[in-house]
Amino acid sequence: MDLVNSHMPMAWQKFHFTEHDWNYDTEPQKHANNRVIHLPRGRFLSGCSGLNGTIITRGCKADYDEWEALRNPGWSWNDVLPLFKKSERFIPTEGFGAATEYHGTDGQLVTTVHPQAPISDAMLDSYINKGISYRPDMFVQGEGEGVGHVTRTVHEGVRTSGADFVNKNPPANLHVLLETTVLRVVLESLPDSESTDSSKYRAIAVEAESKIKADGDAVKLITLRGKKEIIISAGAYNSPCILMHSGIGPKDHLEECGIDVKVDLKSVGQNLSDHPSVFQFYLLKSKMTYDHVIYPLEWLESKSGILGRFPFGPFVFLRLDKLMEDKPEWKAAKEKNPEKDPMGQLPGQPHVEYFSTELYGGGPQHSDLPTKGESCFAVITMLCGTRSRGSIRLNGSDPHGKPKIDHNYLANELDVAVLAEGCRYVNEIVTEGAGTREHITGPWPTTRAHPNGDEQWKEYVRQQAGTCYHPASTCKMGPDEDEEAVVDPRLRVRGIKSLRVADISIMPKLNNGHPQAPAYMIGEKAAQLILEDNRIIG
Image (tube, rainbow, N blue to C red; front, side, top):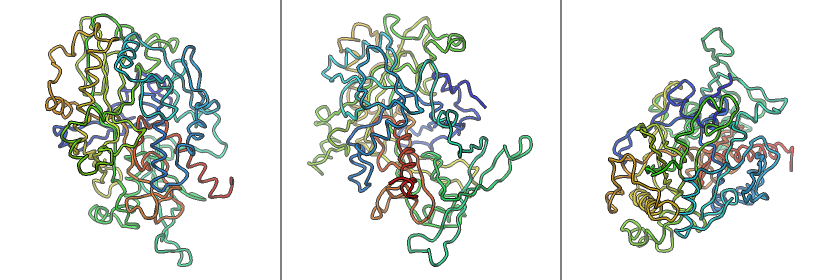
């Protein structure tokens, strides 16, 4: 089944609340005004890469050097940079100062940089005017501070996604089953000669339900056996659920759900991380956005027009040390540990990311629309190095049930304070910066006023913060001594032979920026590890 809305970059919201969305929601978020937040996930070939914002940012050099410092050898920036490049085929854009030595040229994932709307040029001027250094291609180079542009997984008006790795030049030994849902991994006990204190089971197969193998609309239970090993790559929500339904997870929780416990791994489904983000909307005096040139027919006929690209402007990584130094939450954290950044960020890692839209647009919660020819845009403040952690739990033993997802957004007061200050400061940039100050009428909707003072900004954050769609770390990678580790540095599930996890659930700490590029990198790394472990490469 070929989904047009996946090819059209700006059709991403057409999947929300449909059969092609896993239709997950958070539990009520008690620190975010008890709101329930929708968590769209792609339920089709390509998964979330078929409905995301097309953004390719790799994170910071310090992110991966930190992973290695956490005793995960082989995961430093120098180790993973070739893997980032391997999956990419970068198409240069005239006038863009690309750091070509950091880009790949032979991969399946086609990337490029888009032209900017007038509002984006104005935002870039305001960022520079406020003293933020301009580094055009910084987001593939691992830089931790500055303003630049991001490459996108769109070329000639068409989204490129994980499906391209399957549909274009697929390996001869690859067989894809569509309309098939994995329920659990099948484990067998190891013979005494192979059993150890840490490994008593081997993964031999998966149980799945498939419409392909059934008649009509029915589904049939099938078993797919693995000759060498089983690799789970179902994402930060579904990978831990598959493990838990297989008897791999926190003993007390699995027994509560009536699941036979095979391996007691207490951190399966724990450490859930995300980047909470806040939209701030502004009304413009003139038509500097693309609100007035959205023509679906233009894309359908020629793959051109604004629907053929994702209209974001420049992106910013920024540290807030100076802006936060007098805030009570920051000062209290500093008093406890004067040598450490209160957010746990290392030098070379930002506290916030800013990016802006080139038309009115936001998540499903932003349902009010401009009228009467109004031209609006949004600036998004995304929190990096989030301190709050959530969890994923099962609803019972039935693998068809939706999990209980509690992101625990804003549970840490420092998260609230830093995100609030980030929002306040970017409002200052928009309203005072040389590029935008003469073009802004005020907030949109016009009935809204900008918050005044720290407490109002914090309340604004609690009312408005939502997901940036970056769940990670629920099958955390770590060494044997790390009690929170689910997989080892070679992505092997602890206590189970022949079973790995390969997706962003293995991140020991969520990267700064957006996780699409790291997801592909982790896939390339998994392939490398498998070849090494089977002595196919040295």
